[in-house]
Image (tube, rainbow, N blue to C red):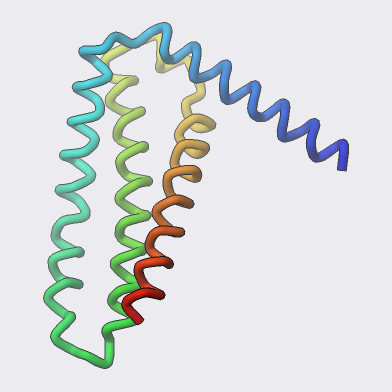
Length: 128
């Protein structure tokens, strides 16, 4: 158990150090551009499949399956947001290209994705 906790502690410090390196290189202006750009791009990618799934709710037998599919689309949207956020940050700052952004991207995606999954399960259990 101690070995696992040491690995988690080292991973957390590596994540924290990478985030500090990224934060030192960025400015408020480029972060806002990256956030809004990532939101827009990920929203435009997720919009057509979500409209298709929402329009299929007229089939009552598929209601549970379509709800689960919408939950998967929300989690995919979170992943796409973080992917494009870090990609846009790399485009704005040359020094960030040298930093490994996979760890912060996956840690932040896992955290927000877990929250969205939990909220989605709560909503699904209330509805069904």
